[in-house]
Image (tube, rainbow, N blue to C red; front, side, top):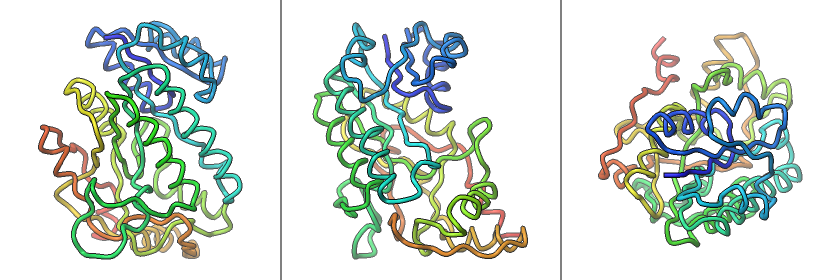
Length: 284
């Protein structure tokens, strides 16, 4: 197959590397001309473009059998609702609109944020659970991007929790420090939501699994066997360990308030391989 990777961050690069090793032809994209030389070691061709530049995306996807969209906003540019409105609209909705016009097979790495807090009830959240939090940009534009991906016959959405473990990625301790340094000791999410997280290698495996199995529709991607501790339990433990003041949780970006089911994806043969890195914090 010939595959366009829209967004060559950590996940995009790893997906490209693995698919190319399997004999697939890879076209990568970047918004930064200075990264082209590095990315040419991972892809057969590299296009410099923004996902919102539809004509360029269509040109880059010529002859491609699939597009895997791994685009995501830079967290440092999303401190206020106004910044999130601009960033998420540009990076998510517009990029997936371009992808849908460029290819009939689109796999989009989305987010659990589309569920908001999951609504009322105690049953596990599934792919059938209604989306919510429609006014918060991080949720609203992931939902819009999903609709664009699913508008094509081969559309597949992989809903993901927080991603960790990529080379050079911030640890959770570093993320708490970022909250102190850039957000004034405030966390945009709620205190009581389980802190679902997934290793980037499991994300890569999920994307390749979806491609090779020809999956379409929506799939939750997470550890299906364990319910993680809450945001507050984890971040309080980190702050206490480091001697920092505890974070204030603003609950602007709502997260699911109970177990999320990945039964649908697990039924296709996929399994998460990495354990939750935060579990040990509460065991210490």
